[in-house]
Image (tube, rainbow, N blue to C red; front, top):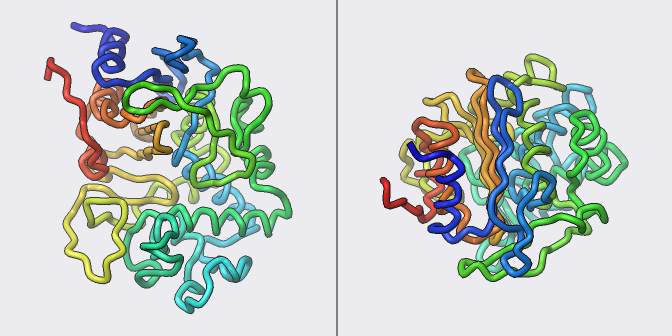
Length: 340
């Protein structure tokens, strides 16, 4: 049987991905850290255990965890309207007054992922009516957290997540210490680009971290750490079934079909298979995390190439065997090895 390290090298080579950093959790403990390939194809510098990657949208579940801690502490309510704290984020839209914390975390705000010429910032259906993935909602909630805490969100994350979980190589803004060892982004032809170094936090996508640091966070998800027991259960309960084969669905009427995917409070769910998941896509950085509370196992994967999601399904199939309808729903072009 082909060894895992050989499989990873083949996936990197044949899939056109420069580097990977992987953390595996078994029985609640970080069991293995795997680093393969290069953080820059020009310098050939290897990916190492403390190499910093863009977590991309894996930023969202971590911020959700901090928000739920604030709710447990009585600083916020799950059904509090965001407009109560930050009334000017969405203008000229009376329906936006109904958007709650719960709507943001379950992606049922009715807001677009990001505003633009095609989709101005407004609600496209009544909040709570159905799923539509929205980074805008997370930024609005970030501003709420900054208002109620009186601090920048990166400081809040430091207090509630990074320090307690001993995540020493993580931040929603760039830190000087990250300069020494970070992965660079690569296009589909493996040409390296310039690493963006976020100076302002964005809880939807700006997290900088390592696979081992993010695995410490996922350990807390598996154990329910830092949440009251009722909240630890609630945040992984399905709040909405996903009925559309893409993450974006802003049309006025939708012909829904079961995608075998649901959304909790910050995580996607594969309810029929007992797994939670999230993906990240910052263009030339891709990421994926998946776990099972029942088996207390999980996998975290960071890639520094545009082709990263093409190998993710096969890689996760090796790391967390089983059916994963989340990949069908995400619908990325998929590399298939010659051995399959």
